[in-house]
Length: 228
Image (tube, rainbow, N blue to C red):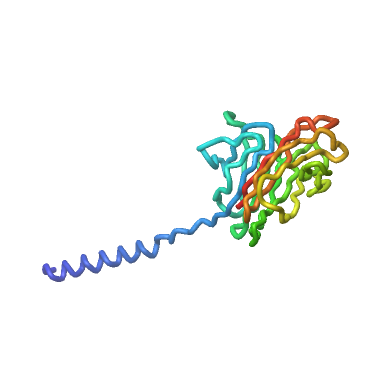
């Protein structure tokens, strides 16, 4: 075999090998994601895990806390919750989060039964109003009421008899500093009082949580989520 023929042979062989490699290489599959707002409505400081991997290492979730919407793998995935500092999961539960939607996931206790999620449809108001909804995330409170506190007049109930795990629809409210009261149905005396600040065109969720006493509102707490 002369030199010219030998060179042509090796060039042809190299092209064939490269072509074969390209055919055998699987094209990288784009992993679909979705947005989930993880909300700690329990009495413990916790961490969330997705298929065994901690979702955020920057901070733990304190009672009443959230770190905002987080990008996670879409589809049915296994989520775990652990008390901060523990290696033993409180529970593992699968959730089917779709890539075309936005969610909030609430952990209200130490069992999978006290975990629930909402689908968040976030359409801001076009005028100078805010949008607000209410979530009952207290397993022991029964039905909750949320009212705007009046000044010299009766409180105005905005969300009435909201049962555990229920998420109300968003309503249109005035922006600014809003004094609120939250209390259990049948126990309007000595309610939980707070003042929330709502920006024009903002979208918010306020949730009641905590382990309350048999009578009254002691132990009830609230948290405010800025959805948008």
